[in-house]
Length: 229
Image 1 (tube, helix red, strand yellow):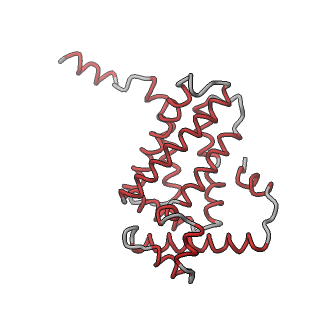
Image 2: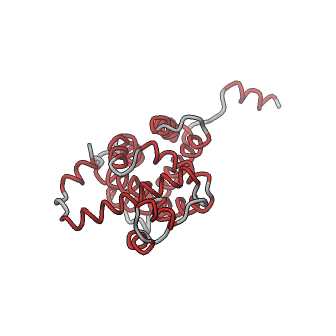
Image 3: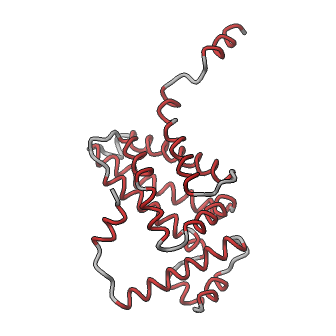
């Protein structure tokens, strides 16, 4: 299901003033990401971003509260799409499968939404900067915790549970979030920065969740060696 197309198609066309504001916002995002990818986060200032778009610093702050907010704007967009994709999953799916399919099945739609704002390749380069910049990574992880809480609420509502009395939605989403982080770290440390490489890493890691939690990790040979000692 193309959740991006569904959401976008349902919205009325914005007026001229709103379209102008959106163009300015999008230009600020593109300029910020291009500068951050080239100079690094610490080497980029709000004044640099504003100058690249030929607007004032005051105009920048009408759209974004900080340099951190504009740097993380695209990941937030992707997270919103994931939350909507989870809401749209069939009710008869098991919760873990609903989370897994929401990420993997909506991957192309998420990239489409990102690509309408900035080149996907630029987004992926900045994503690596986020992973290697402590201040940005800390902010990203804080927002990821907020997303996990939102997803836990969605799962609880799907299953007819009270998220504050039944711990299972939060436990599941915390495990799911940990898997995503493992995939992100492995991708960031690798040589292939393509979206396909990240998707395949996520698919592989998500496919390991069930076996990792429910099966014995030791082979018969390793068990025999352990027993011999």
